[in-house]
Image (spheres, rainbow over the protein chains, first blue to last red):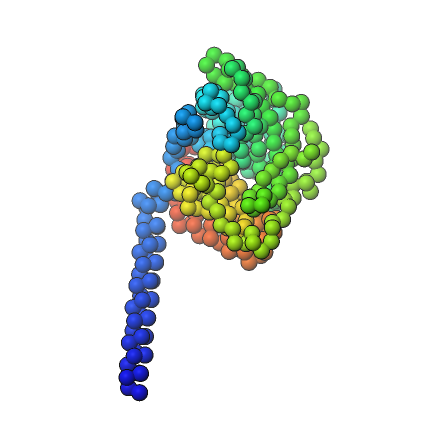
Length: 207
Length: 131
């Protein structure tokens, strides 16, 4: 009887040690994650250079998030086409930033002085509505022109995300890429989103 | 402009029980599966591979990307950005067929995460955007 009691006691002490070690490890791990060095390393985005088919893309500020939205993979783009996009990226990113209009810096505000469609006006969005970019894709590239579509999204009246698309053509002028016109007379408008078999949301124009 | 009923923006609900088991960062072989650059979703270029864009079958990548863009908007309040993240996850989760408990858990996880790790990210994003 005494032996059984001692075994039980030993097991309890063991369990206590294991629990202490586990809690200690968790606290240390959390402390490590919370340490400013680690959180800066993994959760602060200072930009990077992305390489696609041997072409470099400067995914760096300014307009870091607009540049992240460029869909560069999965569109069967040749290295030459990717090079064209790489050169146009800063101009398209600045233009997209101006279209979002959440907090437009003075140097970019001029970009909006064009005779194209303004996404906020098209969808009657007030200043308080935060407009975000989802993806810039459907690239069509020639020597002098780059055509693409931009998907935007915002929180609608019922607080659900509303996804909208418009299309643009940029042309090369004096070493710069500038907005020339829209590819179609009307924008694609509101998108309908569906879950893929892998449970991702994919949005496309209403047919 | 094309006339569209707002109802068309409703997302189709998920695939049931098995979707509940889906966790995914949306990356493979060091690149995002949606073709965008690393960091265009939940996490940054260095953490995109281990920060999930999908929890319990709910795609939260757009709520995360909007949160990133809020941080990068000069003068935007961090508290508002973090509150919007939680609300957007709750709403988006609901639209995708998540139940109240699941949606609250996901929103809670990301809220705590941005509270713990968001300070330096916010500071850097503001410095980049307010030039």
